[in-house]
Length: 311
Image (tube, rainbow, N blue to C red; front, side, top):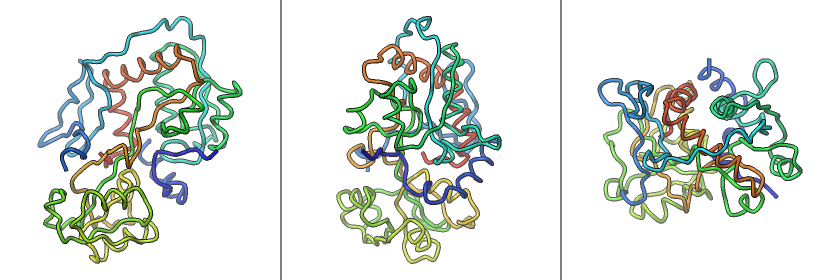
């Protein structure tokens, strides 16, 4: 069975580009997503806890945890160790570091969780399409590899609460007068989108008065925006964030509106997979994830990997 990755296939098609970017980083209403914490004129804290990390000007950090719904701390003494499984072909989330060992956002997050739970951990890389099989065969305790929680994957594993979601975003040329993107504001505007994707389906249902221009792949859609053939580009927010921050965009463009996280189109988010019925580990990871957000560690980690946030 094919697993579903949370982000677009762009990362898997362009692993060298993503690895370079990842290494550098590591050294409407009604269907628009809830707004993340946004820095305005000055750097501001994320508003959580006494050790909150300052958010640089213009940065945006997603918040998927409700401070009013603090997870109960389970009996962590019953967890002697955690064997994490991941992959190496999905930078900046998972890739091989200079020493060949697993590295990336997911790997660093796993280490933070182990420190919070105060248990020993190992992180082993396997092929992406074998990860849930390995979990089922007891060759690991948890999978942290950007596997989306879907109807199909939940038949094979239990998942923690989401620790990130893949937003859809609009991009426009930097000199565009378009500042916000709502259906009534972009009537008649030309929007580039990759044909046959959830992003195209979303536009067809929600932006019925816009003029859609489907392209065969993300590169062609981005080129259309660069060349002023369209007014807007709509696509995977994570891929767009790295394009905007990279040399290929030549500073042409910027995010507008959003983010959009409608689960019917863009999924329910990414959690850590554990073996079905392993409630103790799932609850412990949920508690540790909340603690990272509460202390500001999640914010710090996010900003290291996403200097231009997809949110």
